[in-house]
Image (cartoon, rainbow, N blue to C red; front, side):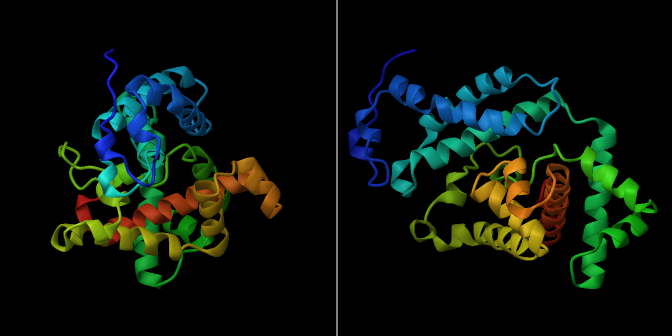
Length: 259
C-alpha cells in the first residue's frame, strides 16, 4: 500500500486532522470504528457469522470511504466512514444470503400487513390486528417477530434508488442541503421526508427504542433497563418498528424502494 498524504487544500472545518494524516494513519485511527460497527451488526446475527470476517469487510469499506470522501460537502469523515463501513458489511451479508428464506418471507408478510392495515386504518396497526390479518395467533406473531430480529432496519444504503447505480453516494443524503443544487436535491428531500415520517409515525415505545438504539447507540439490554422491559421485548419492539418503517417508506417511495 502506498503512503499518500491527504490533500491539505481540501481540509474541512469539521475535520481538522484530515489534511495532516496519511492514508495509513487514517486507517489506523478509524480501525476501532470498524470493530465497533462490525460488533454492533454481529450482535443481531447468528453465531455462524464470524465477526472477524465482518471486520475485514469493514476495513475495505473504510478504505472506500477514504477514496470517496469529499470534505467540501461539510460533514465529518467519521460520519461518512461509519456509513461506508456499515454499507460494505451489509452488502457482504446480502451476498452471503445468510438470512433463511423462511425468515425473509415472514418479514415480507409482516411488512405487507403493516402496509395494508395502516393505509386502511390511518393509524399504527396493533399486534392483534396484524396477527388476524396474517391468520395466525398472537403467540405465533411474536415468534415471527423474534425470527426476523436480525434483519436490519432501514439504512441509507437501502435507500439507494437503483442498486446498479455506482455513482450514487451516501454523501448526497448526509451533506448539508444548502450545498446541493435544489433540482438535484428533490428526490433526496423525498427520501428524507419519508424517513422522517416513518420514524415520527411509530407508536411511542417503538419510536423510543429506535431513538435509543440508533441515535443514542444503547444496546438492546441497556434499552430494556431504561424502559423496564426484557431484552426479548425490546427486540420485538425493534422488529415491529423496522417493518413499519420499511412499509411506510415503501408506500411513499414506491416500487423503487428496495424494502
